[in-house]
Image 1 (spheres, rainbow, N blue to C red):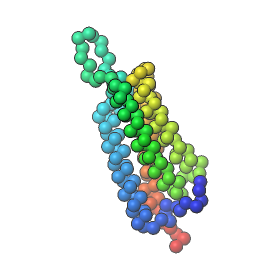
Image 2: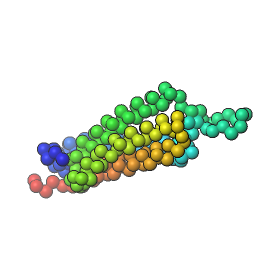
Image 3: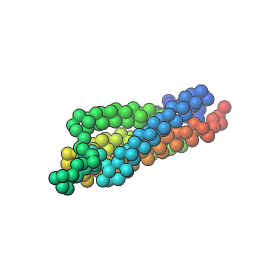
Image 4: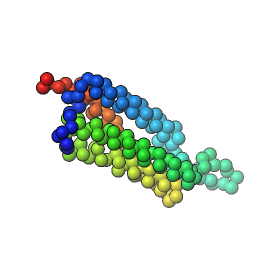
Length: 169
């Protein structure tokens, strides 16, 4: 990584406060989004499939509980989430480059992985809607990877900002 970047534990206390406040607000925001996912999909393959492809009708007289997302709704969901997550992980990755807890090889993997998972997650919603409900499994796997990586990065960053001391001063 770039050795010209300062280490997190070497930052001034005011820079640390800024980053801690940013991370806490980001954690709350992402967690609220995760609660929304739980409410709309019940964290299940069936719930995820119904959220995007609608409820399967087994009888002509049945009224679906959920209707399929329309093309415009799919575009809006994909557009806003790809841009938002790109900025979230750009900010997290930039800060994460300055941590000293995770070694170089793992650091690079952890910085790049969420971008791949986000693409897989929001590519899979199109698969659910237009191809097969089996894409619900891939969306769940990519989503789990995205959130595990996010919370892991946030935990490492908060640990270093709050507890690691600069012994060279």
